[in-house]
Image (cartoon, rainbow, N blue to C red; front, side, top):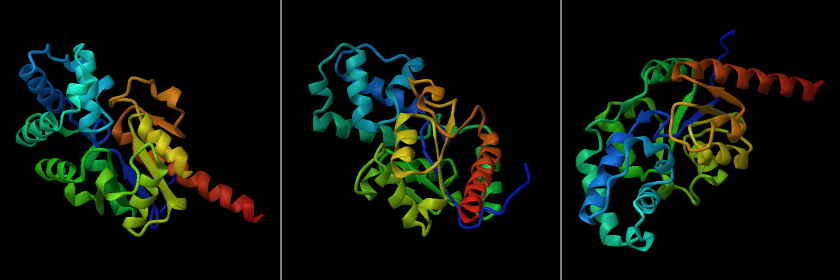
Length: 238
């Protein structure tokens, strides 16, 4: 694939399960909340079913898995306890997936603007990325509290792209789960789906524009989408 200048392109990345392997810390905090309620822990391998919709959804799914009332999972005090515990343990085990740092550096060197588009609260996202030294790669970190509607709404992606001076017509969403791919489709933006993250639905069933099995393959996937974009533009002008 011939490298193409990515100046003017905005690449949006989901956080949990796309950039960072976070399941041990998230499920660890969930299990401490379940223990407080006298409930059995959620197995680590349940991460694909539990993670992706934010802290409240994680609590709800965790309580459902334990056979407990989801009404208790919605208790504000329990949510506050979850957040406090997670802050204490946010980067005990979490780390970037293999190839993340090198790929982000290469994409930025080629002129792309990088932004995080996540359903994790912005302050928690910033704390995590700071602790694992990824913040410097992104023009902005846009959680659901900084937009008018969260993923799977396309508004989340469009507003995040515009917040860094980008054009949604030259943007690509990279994610690991249904909210990411649905968000891109809603926004009319092409998407790259990764297979190593947290989704109970097989990535091929979500039908992103390109599927990759490793983070280092994202650059080639971006090039494929960019080439298709310029070919389509040329045909429109023909």
